[in-house]
Image (cartoon, rainbow, N blue to C red; front, side, top):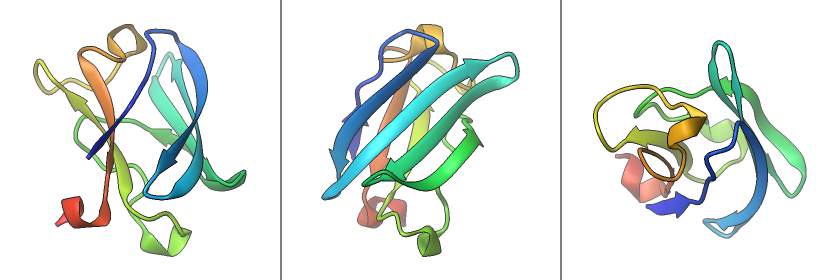
Length: 100
């Protein structure tokens, strides 16, 4: 597992190396929840994925992303909100071996 660093702001973009992949991640809060867009080498993998506690976000190997991403609530089982990014709500990269 690798922690993806997030700040407690409602919308953010970051570039990070995950499993040898050059990833661009956008995480943003809407009135209906937190959403995530993921690209690898600027090629979209998933867009507008709703983020839930302990639910993998990419899910499908055919999309070409090695591993997966998931939010974890460190203080319970609530879905993420931006005010807890980087503290209560952790975004983690799960390598292929972590998914079994």
